Structure formats: C-alpha cells, structure tokens
Image (cartoon, rainbow, N blue to C red):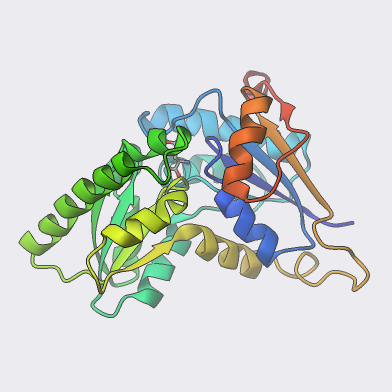
Amino acid sequence: MTPTIGVFDSGFGGLTVLRALLDRLPHAGFAFLGDTARLPYGSKSRRTIAHYAVEGAQFLVREQGAESLVIACNTASALALDAIQAAVPVPVLGVIEPGAAAAKAASCTGDVLVIATDATVQSHAYAAACRGQGLRAIEKACPLLVPLVEEGWTDHSVTAEVIRIYLDELVGQAGAEGLHPDTLVLGCTHYPLLRPLIEQAVPSGIRVIDSAEAAAEAAFRLFDGETANPAPDLPPHRSVRFFATDSVEKFERLGSRFLERPVRNVELVDLEQFSN
Ligand code: DGL
C-alpha cells in the first residue's frame, strides 16, 4: 500500500510544490487540497490563516488518510505551522525552512532577499529561518503579484513593470542597510510562474531560488522509506486526487498552468464541517 502525502495550499500555487513532489517522489500517492474559496491567505490575520489551514489539514488526514502533510503555501507555513502540527497526528512539513536551507546553499555573501505575501513578510518567518542558517535576510511584501498570476498575466508588460518596481525598492533597501545580497528567495507559491520575468529584473549576480524544489527535497528526506523506495514493479504516480473548496472548473483550468500537466476530476469539498 503506497502512503498518501497530503498537500495543502490556500489555492493553486501549491501545485508548483506538488509538481516538484511528483518528480521527487514518483511512487507516492498524493491528495492535494486548494482552499480556493478562501484564497488569498496572504492578506489575512494569523488567527484566520491558522483556523483555515487547520481545517484543511484535518480534512486531508481524517478524510483522505494522509500519513504526512506538506504545507505547500508559504503564508500558511509562516503563520500556522505550529497550529497544524498541534492539530494532526502526522508529520507536517512547511516550505519556509527548506527555502531558507536552499538560500544557505546558494548564497556566498550570506545576504539574501525574500519576496512574499504581506502576511508572510509581517510574520518575519523567513528572516528568522534565514537567521537560523546564519544568513541576513531582507523581506518585501509584493501583494500585487498573486492577483496578476491569477489573472494569467505571467508574461505581461504590466507584471514585468510591477516586478521591476518591487525589486528596485528591495535592492535599494538592502543597499541602504549595507547588505550585499546574491540570492533572491521566491517566498510565495505563485511566484515560480513569474520566474522568467523575475530573472530578467534582478541585478546580475543575484540567483533566484524557489522553495518548491527545496520543499520536495526535504519531503524526500523526511518521508523516504516505503514512499521513496517502493517495490520495483510499482508504476509511478499511482494516484493524485485533487480537492478544492470553490469552482472545480476554475481549479482544473488554472491548476493545469501551475502543475504543467492536466488537472482533472477535481472534487468539491466544504471544509466548515471539519471545524472542531
Ligand atoms: N499560497 C500563498 C503563499 O504561498 C499565496 C496565495 C495566497 O495569498 O493565499 O504565500
């Protein structure tokens, strides 16, 4: 029996993490839940984010039998990881620590830039995780980027201009504080879709990293054993089930862009019933 890994996000962005997980753990079963009815989390309070994320985690563990969870949402990882860990009896992995570890591996100067949602930046979870790795980090909220991605403007001149303005401000702030950043962390699951535009906009010498691949690598290490070393005759990608709390049609349409493969048979769920 293949263990099921539950993957939770506020919406579609976490599918970039699922994409990396499918590559790294091709024999695991996955249940992905996007809380699309309550997206965005990035503009909400810690209390609300924790309340929503715990309901999602409980659905994946109690109803879908997930034996481990990946919180594929930077905002929920930054503000609700403790609450989720306290609410479910399975290992829970967030994306912040793997992102900071990837920054550590990438940075030579020890100074990094982080872009993320408002809530993630206000929590300073990345700054703390980077400090834990011996890095100095400057964080910047980029609240316009999630709606631009949701609108499908991932290759649009307006988006390119917004990114340029945000990054100019961030690089200017880093300079004013005497930092010499050589790494930019994409601290939001939507941002990998903007990676080409972001890479065009960062000053040369700054490397862009995203926490999706780092989280998949951490999941591989944490959940190895049966999942990573299955029976040799097991076919890859045994099962991926998708759940959303709002329009399944929109999830299938937008989700395919994030996952880079078709997203089908999305099931609609009502998380209210999983409130304690
Ligand atoms: N998934 C969120 C994150 O990674 C972005 C979308 C939202 O604000 O809910 O921070």
